[in-house]
Length: 185
Image (cartoon, rainbow, N blue to C red):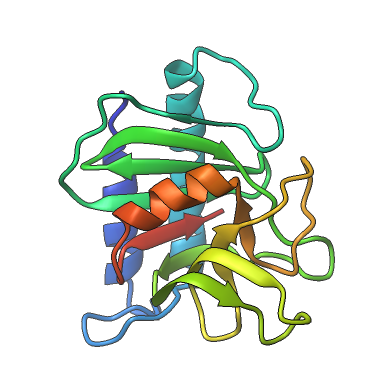
């Protein structure tokens, strides 16, 4: 498993930057220029770690890899690559999971930045999109962007959320806590 030392450093820089929206007194997204730069660095690092961890294999839409000897304690961080349509999960700085995703389609783009998990609900239904089911929902902002289980067609197809394969979404949901960071770049 690979360590992601620069993610913690990049997030620390983004959060310490005066224009950052996240403060120690409030949970909220950070879509500042510093956060976008930190997200870009985190995605590049995660991409390299994943290539080593899954031995360069391409994951098919709906596919994922999960480490068999993942640490059970430590900070959890999720890094989402909009370009690669993949999510990378780190526990205590070690890569423990890689998954295909489906992010927002054109015109309903998934926003980049650094987001805390604000709410978790095992079975949620969308208030915006015809009561659509959103299993293992983890809300990232006040406007409806969330991680959740859903169809993964191999391209951006959501209304802005990050869809995950159901089994991966369930594993991730069981591990995360309110306030854990999701980095999207």
